[in-house]
Image 1 (tube, rainbow, N blue to C red):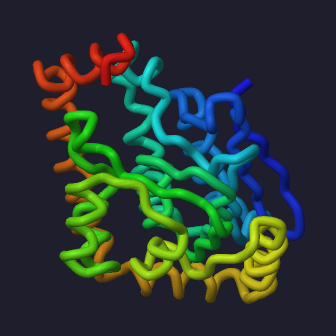
Image 2 (cartoon, helix red, strand yellow; image 1 turned 180 degrees about the horizontal axis):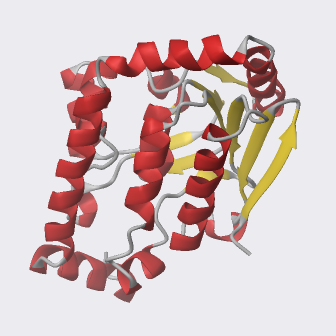
Image 3 (cartoon, rainbow, N blue to C red; image 1 turned 45 degrees about the vertical axis):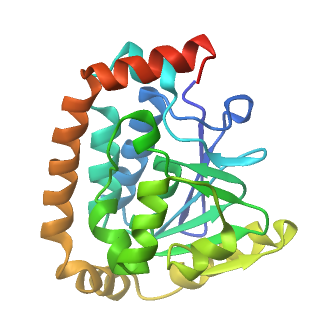
Length: 245
C-alpha cells in the first residue's frame, strides 16, 4: 500500500495522496509511486493530463521525517522531483489544504495550480538546517521576484493561498467545496485539446529554462546531501524528535 490512489478517467490520470492521518507526508514508497505514475503517463497515449490532489485537510506536509532520517540516502525524493520537473504531460494540481516543503515545491513544476481558501503553505527548509529543493531557488525568484522569494525561503513562515497566488505559485483561489470541481474542469479542458499540440506547447513554454532547472536541482541535492550529515542538522532533528524544538 503506497497511499497514492490512482484512477484514469476521460484521459486524465488522477493521483490522490492518501495518508491523511500523517497530513499526507511522503515516504520513499509514495515518492516512487508518484514518479512511476508520472513516467507512465508520459509514455502513454491514454493519459493526456495528470491531476494531483491530497486528502483530508492536507495536500502534503512534505517529507515524512521518520522515514527520511532512517534512510537519508534514499534516491526516491530526488527521482520524483526530476520526474515532475521533466514531465511532458500537463499537470493540474488542486491544493486542498496544508502544503509544506515538497508539497509546495512540486507545485512549481505543475502547469495549472488551484488552491482552496484557507490552504496554508510553508517552505521551512532553513529551519530544518537544509536548503531548498526542486529548483525552487531558481524558479521562485522568477515567479515572485527576488524579494518575495527571499521572504518565503529565508524566513520560512506560513503563508496563505492568496499570497501563493500573488507570488505566481497558484493560478486561482476558490472556496474549498468548489476546488475539486473547478480544478477537474480545467483538467478536462486540457484533455479535450489536441494532445500532441498540447505537449509540444508545454515543451516550448519550458524549453528556455529546462536545462538550468535540472542543473539547479542537482546543485541543491548535492548541498542537501552535505547538510544531512552536518552537526547542525543532527542537532535540529534530535531536538525535533525529543520535543525540544
